[in-house]
Amino acid sequence: MDKTELGALILRVTLGVLFFIHGLVKFQGGIHNIVGWFDSIGLPEFMAYGVALIEMVGGIALIIGLATRLISALFALLMIGATLKVKLSVGLLGNGQMAGYELDLAFLAMAVYLVINGSKVLSVSQLIFNRDTSVTKSI
Image (cartoon, rainbow, N blue to C red; front, side, top):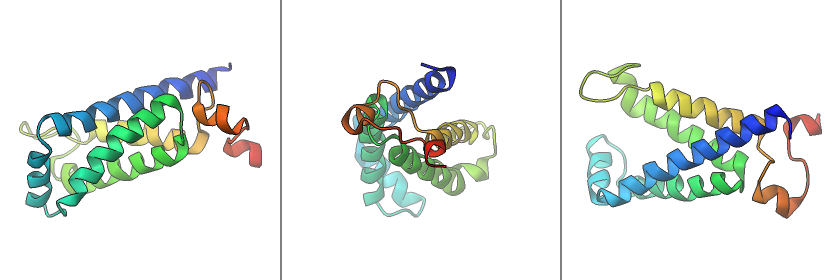
């Protein structure tokens, strides 16, 4: 295993665990609270369920290495949406009442890296398809 693949594995599993936890907390804390919050910021209420499910299911998928690029692209879109809709107005480091978008940018960077490079090591997708799906392989 080369260093690039080891780094991608670390990013993939870390991002997966963090998103899974974020989704789980949304349900444990009462998804109805998240639904109400989405409504209060002008987002359709059903999106709260979608976001929480994407975070949980996508987090598990990343941890096991299933559809890494697709899930990472969804996570990148979530982070762009969260930053633009909620966090941009409070600034990079926040305003004392709400965290800023620094963590969202870190998650976005991790997700974009995985979209570009993928992650084959200890990956269910690699076992199922048994092929190299890296972008550079096709160039």
